[in-house]
Length: 333
Image (cartoon, rainbow, N blue to C red; front, side, top):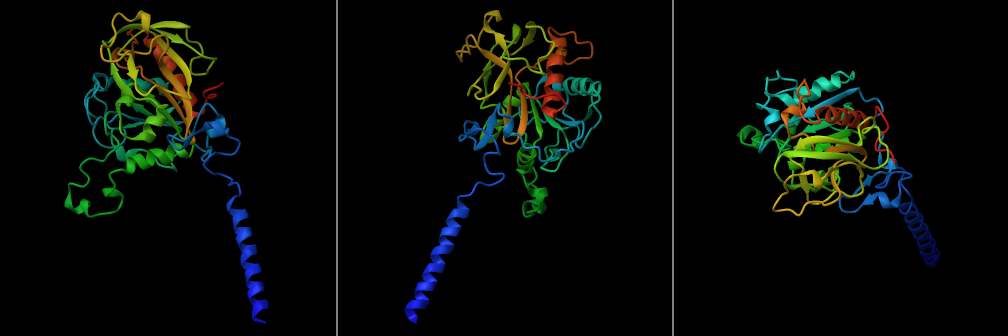
């Protein structure tokens, strides 16, 4: 009798173990690699699906509005085209010298896109936000930390979100993972240097340095893309021409600068020779990311578009934003 009970128990345990093992090895509906994504699209450096594979995109919130949020907070150097720091809150009054934000706002509104803007990190959207894209207009350094929130003793001992210094980072990541669009302009590459996930969002790229601000020739490269449609194959522009370390990988390159057109080079970086990228795109961790290092000068954003190459730059950025929003095909192969 004892033997029979032991035998039955052993058989039951063995069956459960086998069943449990088989279940544990099943394929989840939404695991680390989205359904249909190529194994090569998995990037173990950042633990994300990224590259030009559309299957890396998560369309988890299909009811997004035709609306974007511009974020331009600086926690370090501030580009002149950003002007005076904005007041707290959403859509504070713009100063006459807030040229870049005002320019972007006008360009996108002309396309029927609603535009909000802020320099308050706590305003960044989370996983349930319905913005179609977030635009980082040259934020710098640790702009996604809510500085000073723990200085107040009442907040320092509070574990609710009001004392949560990293909540903007969490919100941005969850927003992207749910299928949000992201656009990086110019010194968005001088932002959050030591956050690996953000470096991946930029295309496995980061700012190292730049030479003199000067005229150069932009080349449109790669296969046809909605963000570069209608642009001339080459056009002049004036910028700082960022050198990058690391150099972008697993992305679709959209534009480069002809380094032979530059009068001078950086003396502390060897440069990128015959292929110096200035714009690219990728799917990243569920979202879309359209990225450019261009946009240093105020005259590239002014209403009269008087700067060298300003008309072409506007067209590139507006079309890039629309593709990141999903209004046009994104990062086509």
